[in-house]
Image (cartoon, rainbow, N blue to C red; front, side):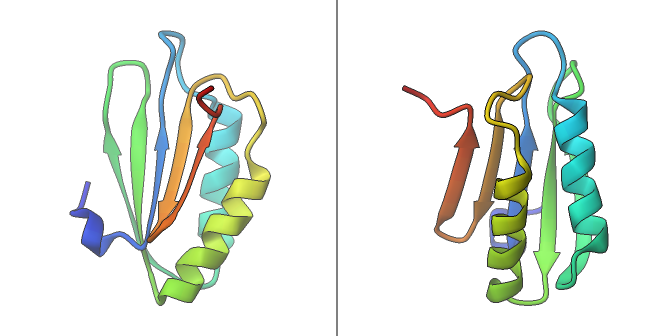
Length: 98
């Protein structure tokens, strides 16, 4: 994945030894494909069970924040594996750690 300073938005899909939440991942990728403000998306594999991360270069910090909000609202409350989303100082993870 590109260095974090180049990524206006970072989305990571993890696994609990049973693969990632593919439906959530596909939804996020649809949002990014249709999202205005996306310059470039790079994907990097991070594990053996389909885990991966997305580095999104946005046209502006505002665009990254807007994408963050759209993605956050689309994520299930209890995904099959952990999902984290970061855009600048904005951070969201599901499921939340207690």
